[in-house]
Image 1 (tube, rainbow, N blue to C red):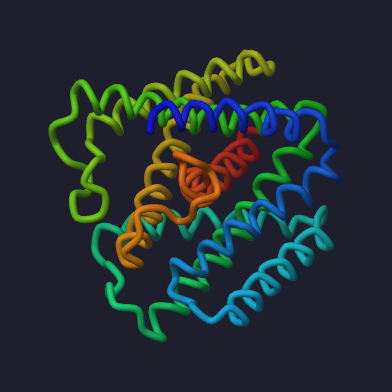
Image 2 (cartoon, helix red, strand yellow):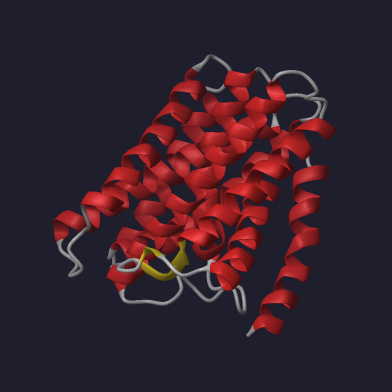
Length: 272
């Protein structure tokens, strides 16, 4: 399984880098949109929508909102959308602690999960495209946002493996530990500071980058846990089978969904 995961990652990484670094934002936006629609398709299944026609309608609705967001860009509206995205993940943090959906699908929790999926997909797409189009270094800021998440995953894996004892959320994701979270926070903050330094952040905002790295990693953990909750309720191990050894799109994007709105909002506040 590990070998399969490594081979898949080695194939995907050059493609991801090429899309982020080589494409102008006007081309990057629709490519990212297509990927996110794939994630929305998997989300609809995890939410409990079984009817194919309804799932197609769901994707059409998400696509329409993405196009609307593209049409109204540039007038401050995207800052509001980013605020909605950040607000949801803050609320989700308390939600995971205090509340869980009924495991058995019903009309109420199915459409609630589906509505949350629309919010998550659209706000994350706005965050990603806004970072990418933020200026001459927008491509590299986009890459930095993803590298923070990737570094956090690596830090969590090794610290959790060697020091993990106390479980983070055993009823949602038994494999995650507090030691893994601490390792992820250290790795993410270090990458945020180092990446910011390479991109010209040499003043007092270096401390802001460290804080932003911690917040981004914290959000990524919440995103990961929330998708784990959805999968537990749907009684599936992975959101899909698109990537051998990695599962579906959502299995690769769960952390990113939560991390990107926080990173985009943070860079705006820091004036980057």
